[in-house]
Length: 182
Image (cartoon, rainbow, N blue to C red; front, side):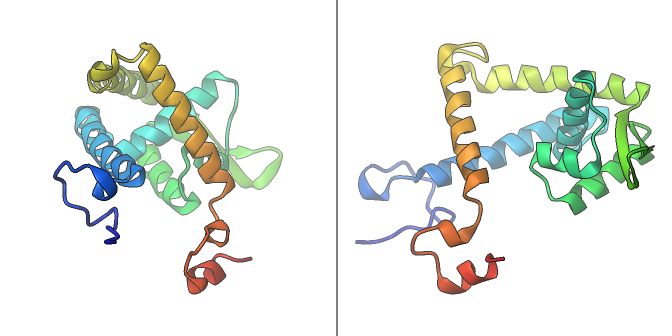
């Protein structure tokens, strides 16, 4: 039996044991989505990663929160160092500000500036339209099939967060497991 690595699999459609794996399909879809969002938000001066951080900060702000960079990174699912780089770029562009955290002098609280609000709301409209287009084969953003897809993805993400450590992966190479052990 031939085992096909999901990242080197040919793009042709096949059936049977050599069909694309779920992981491969999710990976390919994620790459395509990222490229589409990058192109969609470029006219407002953002990258996909910057959009993710700015939109997440906007959402948290609307809920009355002033997150630290670490908290924002947790929400976005991004490494704290990468979030720091993105926050600096967004701050240089006048889209967010960092204020001292009164409860922790080592931390800052982030907030969207008025200019950032204009940019993020414009970007969110564009991304919403893009999502509607991309989900049209399922009946659009508000369809039952799209809702089921979102729920399935949430379940997989929650499980991935819970089991992110390679030591929990059956048959993972021993050296990979030992690198991820505390």
